[in-house]
Length: 273
Image (cartoon, rainbow, N blue to C red):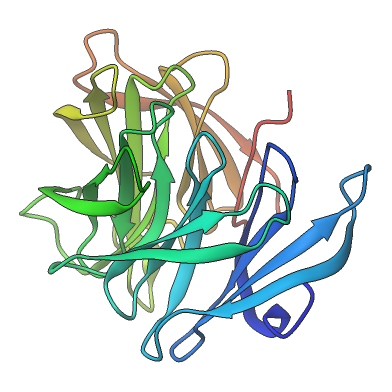
């Protein structure tokens, strides 16, 4: 990112509709800044449109858009909230709508369902998938009263919630957590799968499976773009990109392939084609 928010940018999302800006948030305790950047016709960042602030206690980590592109949602670990901002579809600038507080853990990443009815936040401190309602008229995200833990009750060690992602068709949700330990290889991370209805409400939590390692600094889950039952996990400890498959009955999942890249600290992944 560029502008006054650029020094500690942790996450950025590109708006997929006009005006096609890039929206980033800064990271860390006391880092309460968001930034909007303009891009040219090639998608290259060329100018800072706006820098804006959240709360003084904010510790931001992730953001995501409403499927229409009219609203930006931000996960704030410091205030335990999912913020909603309105996106000006002419200038790209944002304006405050709401601060949707949660009384449990601290939201780390947030993603909206393609229907625009619900959003999901992954909490870092409590490793929960938290369901948010999205108001039809204002776009505001508010806690629905529903949250699911993705660490088994009998698990040893402590964990950090990682990511939650919706499958291509919008019928499944995957979420991961990683080990919070000085020796993350000694503690399992976990991946969990959920079934969603057509609007994105969570119908069931179908499985919790241990991942190959504790995940290190990642353990990110990335659903495939051609098959809802396939997803990738980024293993930062072994430096592997793993392909996983959900069972036909949906009650379990297992690793079916692994590509060793020999690269330390793998973090993120996306499907290009």
